Amino acid sequence: MRILLSLFFLSFAHLVYTQPKTDALLQNILSTNKDTIFQKVLDNPNYYRLQIIYTQVNRDKYNKPSFKNYYFNVDSLLYFNPASTVKLPLAALSLEKLNEQYIKGVNKFTSMQFDSAYHHQKKELYDSSAENYLPSIANFIKKAFLISDNDAYNRMYEFIGPQTINENLHNKGYKNIRITRQFMSFNEDENRHTNPVRFIDSSGKLVYNQPMQFNPDSFYFAHIIKIGKAHYNNNDSLINEPIDFTKANYVPLENYQKILQSILFPSSVKSRQRFNLTKDDYDFLHQYLSQYPSETNYPKYDTAQYYDSYVKFYFQNNTHKMPAYVRVFNKVGWAYGFDTDISYVADFKNKIEFMLAATVYVNSDAILNDDKYDYETVGNPFMYQLGQIIYNYELNRYRQYRPDLSNFEINYEHRDPNNTRPAIKDADN
Image (cartoon, rainbow, N blue to C red; front, side, top):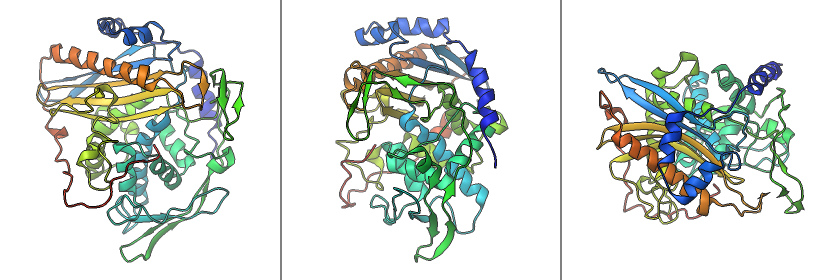
């Protein structure tokens, strides 16, 4: 049995002595935005559990990038619920597992089906959003990135298995990460068991069968995390106690920044921090991290509900439109009042680029699971203002060498007007 206990002792010992990090440069940039909501959050960072990492990307004369992080109130002990942002590492790990298994006839486009073999597990034999109506890792990644679909996360979790998820991320140096839960009302034991999975060819013939997996590893939960004054439980009963996140998914913001950097700029990180991906895998991730629902045929999403800036918080204003010359390669998450966005922004017209990772907690009634969060009034407006103040700063920042961003110029899909399949209006995300 491979035990993670020692890893968590080491990581927790490291966490105990960390202090919140704030850099004067970023603090000064943020202070120039006088928007009332923005300044209210900025002035109360601990109340809003605010953390920001702004990453400058500078190129040399050979277009080689270097990265400089600036922090505002970044503290690995200041917990935020990662919500759907965990779909980012799971997408990369899913592709990595396919590559390392190297099973003939099995790749990200191969059809797959999920059986059930344990309490409350759910089968998935078909996927109505896919072109061939069958699930695949490729289609799960599309759904996870385009609109942040939850079932896609669950199925990637089941395919990789929680033991492999955590071991591989820890081995890459992300030792403080803990991913232990699916987005279903499973108990700890149920989350340790994952569905049997089979891959099939176009005729339905079995290519590869993966039996149910069980994660025997121990986790270290010494850091108690309780948030709020009350919460609703799974039976919709009000419990007048904080909600306990001690055993929930946990990913420090700095880990997310580095994971996204490793996916977009693999040669810029240490070899151990990279995912074992092919060029085609990287191209696929880059495309769907930045493609819009309106450009995509399968899945086909209702563009009134899932507009272009739907998962682009830093550019999400009332128009719901994105600048034609800007692409955002990112993953967002929102749950329990936490709003989080980990992004790389490329402006092809003005030749600028930067990374921005931020999380904010907006739950004024301090009751969790009541579906009464302040996303629309505080969280999303704050994220938009944050994105715009950094974007405008970058527009005016001096660079010795303007970047050649051609590696990120992607030939995106175009919605086929002859595609008569009904558009998806309501997905679980």
